[in-house]
Amino acid sequence: MRYLDVDITPKISKIGLGAWQFGSREWGYGDAYAEREADAIVHRAIDLGVTLFDTAEIYGFGRSERILGRALGDRRASVFLATKLFPLLPVAPVVEQRAVASANRLGTRLLDLYQVHQANPVVRDGTTMRGMRALQTVGLVGEVGVSNYTLDRWRAAEQALGSRVLSNQVQYSLVCRGPEDDLLPYAEAQQRVIIAYSPLAQGLLGAKYDRDHPPAGRVRAGNPLFLPENLDRAADLLGVLREVARAHDASPAQIALAWVIRHPAVTAIPGASSVAQLESNVAAADIELTADEDTALRAAAARFQPISGRSAIPKLIRSRRRR
Ligand SMILES: NC(=O)c1ccc[n+]([C@@H]2O[C@H](COP(=O)([O-])OP(=O)(O)OC[C@H]3O[C@@H](n4cnc5c(N)ncnc54)[C@H](OP(=O)(O)O)[C@@H]3O)[C@@H](O)[C@H]2O)c1
Image (cartoon, rainbow, N blue to C red; front, side, top):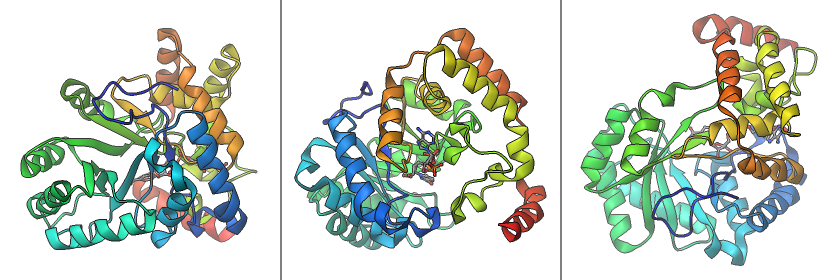
């Protein structure tokens, strides 16, 4: 495992583990996964040097936090535990109550990283960060983070907190490269962290799905990337991923992850549906892509133009009916 060069203890692993899948029915992994596989995934991750574990109060309405807390058990101290506040009404007293509730579900006295899941369009960050500051003062929260924040709003949150907001958790992958414009340079210059979510584009970049074999579960039934037309359009990118993968004796998913974590400020938090996937994802931390491979992957990613936005909606409805 490799770790981020940031003054944090325990060090943050370049590959973490996303726990949305734990206990969230919309992924469709079932009870055996929640009751047994999730535990095994967490333990294997710790064995392999993963320190960053990410969950949120909204995942499975608290079930993900409970499952993760139970799985960590007496190994809790060795990890950097991150959860998120769903900012329905993120005023200071609510922020404080919700942090306590998350800590209880996780069975911990410290949230190493407490993140605002997304920017609230109405409630500004002043009151939210007042709550965060109080939580840091009493020692329930170590570092404060945000998620899905623009750079301006991230900076505003830092100003409101009066100290660093360590991380911004954003979608970042070969099919979603927006954070490269401003968030990555800011993070690198300021010793901040970008936590890349959906680094495998929810499994698309694992290269095992096509129009005849779409993934199961409501999450991906609602993701336009898995529309039959988009799976067709992704064939070229997946082909380049396979080609680079062959040169490294690796899998397409490993190359997709190695690409995401090339940047020094980035850690990725792929979800895993099995221990084998987790092991494969961790091994991606050791893959070094060449500049030529990076160029080829970027070019293929730029050629991939999925149907998205409004034009995807009627197609999504039709495709859900067919499943
Ligand atoms: N802050 C936010 O707003 C936000 C939003 C989304 C996610 N997140 C966080 O980010 C984490 C990861 O994102 P995500 O779950 O959306 O997407 P992801 O990590 O890109 O995709 C995870 C899925 O990819 C497949 N996969 C994983 N490893 C693989 C491998 N080695 N080979 C082939 N397929 C593999 C698995 O699905 P199958 O095996 O079923 O194909 C797995 O469930 C979440 O768990 C959550 O913690 C945060």
